[in-house]
Length: 115
Image 1 (cartoon, one colour):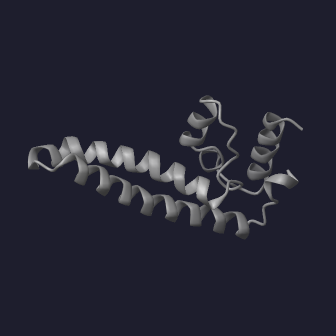
Image 2: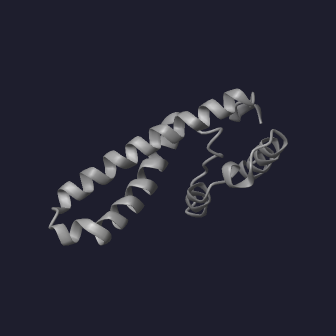
């Protein structure tokens, strides 16, 4: 089975189990797939992949917003801004990874290999 067929089947399983389309196929996962990486839906991803993606997108977005809304005018250093953004992103990434694993377990989803 090709990755695209497996991905379609995974989305079908998620829909059948009651997941919303936005939860089954978040924007960051669609973007990563457009870049050519074969990443399954977050409910089927490993904890580390979910953490990495959550950290990168949330930390970057939050850091940019904080920079332009507050940090630049306060004279915050770039190294502090980067570190604060990545720590905040890491916290978000771990929390979302835990949520995805918990929801997959609660709804008794099969593993990615079983799709």
